Length: 109
Image (cartoon, rainbow, N blue to C red):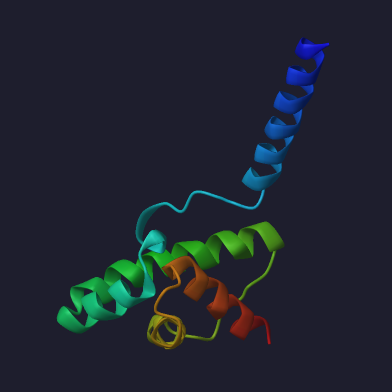
């Protein structure tokens, strides 16, 4: 009976852990940087603008590929990164991937 109870507890904990994992994902590259750091680094050196712009372009490209869309056509890189930076200034604790999501939401509107 104790083994059966132990196995039940383990199963519940594993299931709970798996449920928690479904809402998380790995952010590779510049997207994992906090918005406050992105704003600071870009203000220190314009070189960083290119780094974050490249990451944002890749993020947007992947979104367009997955959804068969053309979001961002008609907008230059400057406008897209400026929109992401607007989000970052207002949400310094977010990671840059949230700023990329904000850009997508703005383009969809």
